[in-house]
Amino acid sequence: MDKNYAPEKLKLLITIVDQERGIYYNTLIRTFSVNYQIVVPAKGTAASELLDMLGLSASEKTVIFSVVRQDRLKPLMETLEEKFRTVRGGKGIAVTVPMTSIIGTLAYGFLANERSLYEQRV
Amino acid sequence: MNREYEMIFCIVNAGHSQTVMDAATRSGARGGTIIRGRGTADPEAEQFFHLAVQPDKEILLILVNKEIKDSVLKAVHHEAGLDRESQGIAFSLPVDEAVGLS
Image (cartoon, rainbow over all chains, first blue to last red; front, side):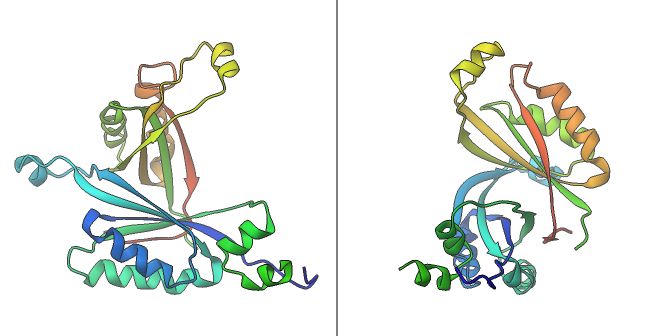
């Protein structure tokens, strides 16, 4: 590895959207150099008297766990915020959690989309 | 970076998520998201602590203002802790950024 190489920090992005928009946001997030995501079904529980009146106590959600490079995060969060506001049925929330440690240069290279690390290994 | 939020992760036996949400909302949480999962534990540790970890789990993600994080955690622990039928474990992680919150 180049001794001057400084790894980019990684963050865990947790995005929660309505189920029918799961694939849309999964694809969108991938365009920000995100190689690895886990998508799981979930249920939302936000309290709402209206939902209770309609007999709907929970809504079907998709949770997307994505590993994102620090330097791609700002444009990604800005894009998500815009899409939550403008896409029909596309409301959601997205939060980031710091990742403090990761083991393995291949794992790091894959998660950070740092292809130069892989080329050095080959 | 404005760290005004924390993400509470709470892992309980399947079927006990409502207990957690009731405790959390009484302490000011606005809502949560529930994921199904499978719990695994070291058999020797189970024996030592006199616990039998049930495999079917629900994981609740509850985003809260950091001012109420402690009271939410305490309430969840009181109602759904490891020594209860829920066998709940709860912890919080700092949130660096958050969008989409009204």
